[in-house]
Length: 262
Image 1 (cartoon, rainbow, N blue to C red):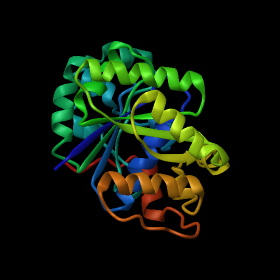
Image 2 (tube, one colour):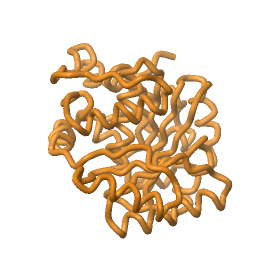
Image 3 (tube, rainbow, N blue to C red):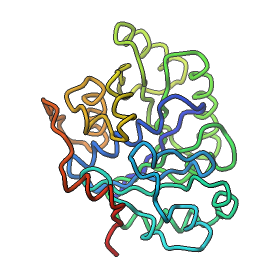
């Protein structure tokens, strides 16, 4: 049975898109059919994180009625399905958000897990992902501005009938991990799923347009992402030592922007 999660943060800059890309990849590594969708149609960057910047068809064209959803599905690492939003403002202007429900319905037939990378803020575009998912996962940095905005997102989600599944602390200093966990759980009134530490490997992976769970699987951040993915999938955590690289076939598939077979 498919599970849909919206990854939200309230404010920009928390690493929400990085969390989405790495959780999706980790779920795919665990053998789960996973699709991630960039719902930030105005400031899209999920494709950039995964090295798919030149995708000819995106969610913009689908929502404009110019393409079918299968034309906008691309293959990422380990068979991860990726639906990017476009980078042009013209495409954003032509997109009709009312078509999103049909898109979500089509995607549910194609995967076990659906991760929606929500826009920052509480605009109309940001509200839709909060309503369509089974649960909303809040990405929070251990700082007051991030906490305040996450709390607003939590209140909005519950007001419109959505469900908060928990919080993920991102870019945390491990020495303060337990204190941050208690503070965030008390402030937000939700449980903390796990903590992703501040890690230079994440920046290096982003520069290489590759998820850190692929580029540096032995890093502390990768271990955290795999733990969270295993928790979502209800499976034991498998440690993956070493620096195993993404295979040639997977790199070639991404380079050619291979679409999901119809």
